[in-house]
Image (cartoon, rainbow, N blue to C red; front, side):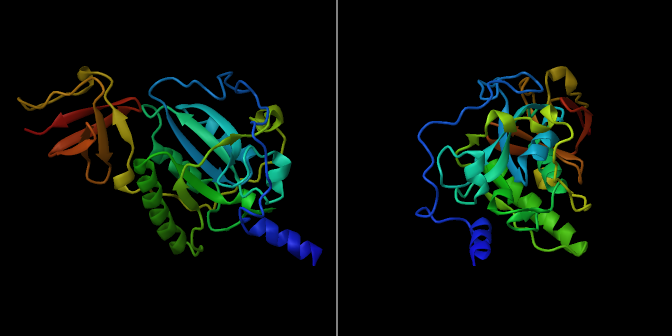
Length: 285
């Protein structure tokens, strides 16, 4: 009965009345990223964006993202539960409700949110519910916590697309939690960039082997760093600022201009990526 009760606590999220009380003050953590030496808690440079993912043990998950070109800094932590400022030991009991997650601060001019989503889906098994491989419990659940509506819609669209691919491969239904980002609690210093400090440490990450095709509606945004990177073959083509942002549909090859929160389709536009920081757009005559 005792073992059964303990297992139930690990597989079921606690009610607020059952959760551990936690504490008012944040637990101590590192001041700088062990790999990049950048400030873990910020301030972060202007123009960067934030994402948050849970895909099992955060040791391997954090390493996965800090290696991505365009990711400025990462941090291991806890989110999605009830207990304020939890410790690692408390979270492992299943009585905080938190998942182990990775905070990802990235430069959207270099890596897109869609690319981060693709990495997320392909690097773990999102069909396993309250576990990830041999790591069992609510702590290890799959989760995407979003910071704005665009991220939320992109996460939902990518989930639906990947679920179709998984179904075709004989896999089950995706159980990933997708919700607005709750408060993020930084994990203790020992857990920050753990596998950089302990290169032979445990990493339970294992994908399904099924490729994730990001829907065209979630295709990456590319920035044109200056007007010289836009080559127009039609007189009277619209002029855009140096921070013009284009959304490319890689299926149709067309581009949409995103400006002032509104997207305008540019008909007959062929946009070819020159690099991840910019692209060349040529208007047909």
